[in-house]
Image (tube, one colour):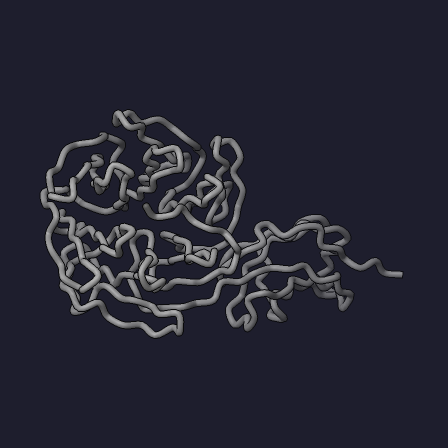
Length: 342
């Protein structure tokens, strides 16, 4: 009598289409004559590697339900299903460079169509409503990159071409807060009320609400963008993707001194904290792309979302994770709550 394959675990349990999923299993007989397959939400997935105990497959497009199942099939003998959650695309046709953001006053998602550096596009900032409607934010910002909100709904946006930081108030009025910020990319708001801006050429600057600017820290330059997030410990965490496969997530203390928090990543990008103090980072880790979760001590790193071409993430008020690729954003109901705005 043939023994049914058994799924022991999925790594990770969240994914977007195109992500590489590891299925830890038993009794998966790799018999190509009899036929083998992995079904995700009833759709056959491409298998890139397989053994009796481990299958690596790619999450297919066309999955209808977010809460769905993975099933192994060996010559018509199927495993019991294992649960997986697939991200739902909420917007496409964008050009996202860093983390998206949630407007705390409306709960709307803010995304960018940034364009190439120095490229002028007719519309660059957009709101995505809960009903999925996408509307243009009617302000002129070239190459918007980093986005952050304060608790009153003022949005801070960097322009990496001009090296400027803008503020857009809840009425839609735009003003320039500071200029001369280099290749301004990541932005984060500190508990001291200042805005911190990452220049990908190697500088983090502290900008007061009135526009006074000072150098806060000097770090390794990046080939793409700086990504910033303040942790619950008050330290500023930074990723700066380089050409190494062993890049680090770094932190900067209140005196501007930086050190390594966690290492071993390929091109780490967007970062965000949950309320438990765990850090989520977009990165390639151990050969697989997606989002990893890093423990508060930086020692435990686990894949959390499988996906390719991801650049950033943020959390909604109800605990969904928004995952942003170069051109799209997906919503994943994972029950994780991000750091509260102050």
